Structures are given as structure tokens and as C-alpha cells.
Image (tube, rainbow, N blue to C red):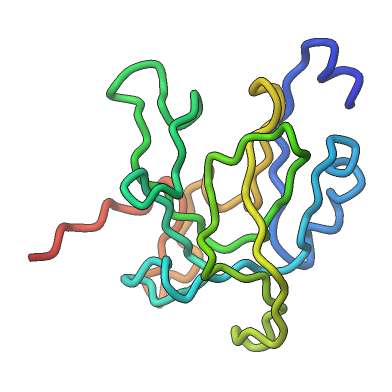
Length: 167
């Protein structure tokens, strides 16, 4: 796979959070990527509407959503200004990688027991790599649409409506 990408191929690797992240670790390591294999939470930069510290918010305004061809799009109508990551693990790429979703200092990797952080490690970053030939995302929940907890009205991914501005 690495040789195919170096030869001009492209790869989109979507690795879900614990415990699934370890299934992609060997492939990720071939591109110099380290996966935390835990859950990443941020007690300051999370989606307050969901009250879930694993639903991390990245915005251009905060500086955690970088200007990058992926976030810039081909024109203004495709420009991405906000991303909510619906749970996941953190990633650390090789020195020449580019992070377009940057974790804040308040983000930590945690082993969750009954949805409570039981242990924590240092922060990491989500990355795009090289010359846009490999993109890794830490969760399958962003590019899909689902109603993961219908009884609690928790909608993630592309079906999630834009939050209404508060006054």
C-alpha cells in the first residue's frame, strides 16, 4: 500500500476509536502515523449542545481548523469553517505531515470506563499527510450520517443540523 501511494495512488484511511483503532495500526505505521488507540476528549472545546466531551469542535476562528486544500475547497461554497468530530482517537503523523484539525492543549487521550475518563495521556493531533495523497481521520462518524441514539436525539455526521446562533 505504501509503495502504491508513493507511486501516485491516494488513500483515505478511516480508523475508528478504541477498540477498533488497533486494527489499522500496522497500516498507519507504514506511513509513519501513530494512533492513540484510546478516546480523545476535550473539556473546553467540545460541542456544548451534546454535552459530550468527545464531540470536539474545530473552527477557523479558534485556529484549530487550519487553512488547507481539504478545508478550503475549490471555491467559497465548499469552504469548511467548522468541524465537529464525533468521538475518536488522536493521531500523530510524521514530521513532514500537516495537521488540518489541531487539538487544543486541553485535549487528552483517555481510556473511558462507563463514559468517564479513567486514565489520560498526552495530547496528539489529527493529520493530513504529505501532498494530499494520504488522509487519515480518526473516526468513521464524520463522513457518515447516522442517528446513533434515536431515543436521546443524538445525530452525528452529515445529518447533524447546523447549530442555531444563540443571542
